[in-house]
Amino acid sequence: MEKRSSFSGSLGFVLAAAGSAVGLGNIWRFPYLAAKDGGGLFLVIYIILALTFGFTLLMTEVSIGRKTRQSCLTAYGRMKKGWGWLGGLASVVPFIIMPYYCVIGGWVLKYALVFITGQGGAAAGDGFFTKFITGYAEPIVYNLVFLLMTAVVIFRGVNKGIEALSKVLMPILFVLIIGIAVYSLTLSEGKEGGRTGLQGLAIYVIPNFEGVGVRDVLMTIMDAMGQLFYSISVAMGIMVTYGSYFKDKDNLIRSVNQIEIFDTVVAFLAGVMIIPAVYVFLGPEGMDAGPGLMFVAMPKIFAQMGVAGNIFGAVFFLMVLFAALTSCISIMEAICSGMIDKGMSRHKATVVEGVIALVMSTVVCLGYNLFYFEAVLPNTPPGKNAQILDIMDYVSNNVLMPVLAIGTCILIGWIVKPKTIIEEATKNGERFGRRHLYTVMIKFVAPVMLFILLLGSLGVY
Image (cartoon, rainbow, N blue to C red; front, top):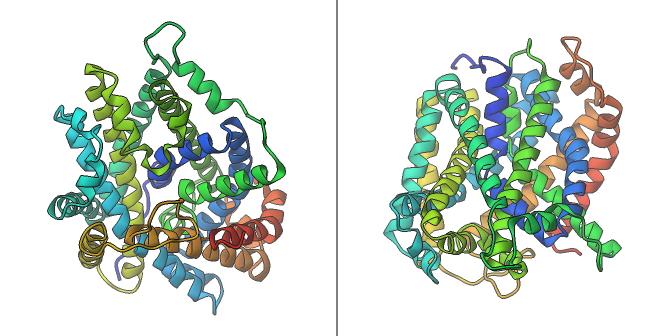
């Protein structure tokens, strides 16, 4: 078995973990949900949940990883004999996510190249996205390239691969996000009295309680809680795996707080990037673009910016590409790390998982043509059909992840007890200011909230 690697320091861990957390879910899903759920109301609820619910799950998983020095596959069994099934479940989640994430990463790569080569106007045309994803060879090729980009980093290892890339890409990503967000605020419709980016920002950050009832608030809470799964990469084995590379001497509590802050700031800035631009060029009705926001609505917005549109679009999709790549790297590492713990070399594990992911992602690509069928899931929007990608996303994100998180809460809250995590987090004498909150959340609040979320995902209410 290979000697277990470690991040060189807390900075490497924070940037790598933040890179995992800052992915496609932050860039398109957060702004979409914020627009749908009353702007500022969603933001306030999300921040409260991030500081309580999100912190609890993130602290738990990183601590489990560092305490056991194992990947997600074997860590849970080390925590308590007979609970290894949680590790198996934690490994299945990234295994399902990896193929379709590569497909979406390929889509982002395609759009980035379109805008970089000055062809952004074509991407704004009606049917461009549909024509692309329903093609045969092109989506598979872009998927393959994105998968190879991911695999090369995993092949190089924790320090020379994951940490080295994260230290370069994450600062660049943050600068690009700030730059695009600032530019978005300067946009205007161009006519006197027309819509402005600052007006769009107001819609985003000021809570709108008009016509909001108790049920609306509850649904917003469920949306915000579901978004936290996407945002902080919990319940998919990633943070357990990355935590296993975190050195004992480094401050775990401070690092988790930094990841929490970084991820929330980026998610907020994603909304500042997108919502003002959508408001200016598409009006209030553009806020309902939903999941098609990134690949359909945004190119149309760039097309209306004139010459600057190609530049803005190229920077935007490069930024999204970086975010997708750092997240996909963490997903693949969670899978390969389990193989390594079972005695396989890193290089062999990377090749094996790469081949499996290529086969499965090719099937996902063909789900829009050769394997096309019509299906409806509990979370399928009205008038839409779910495809292979949607089914894999639903099973992993809406079913398995809540089940895994509930199991983790039961294991830590009631079997090995919260003090196990608290002791791990404070082994160097660190101050755990939220220890009482953590105990209440992991034992009572989080499992109940997760069960309600699971019921909603299953279409019970």
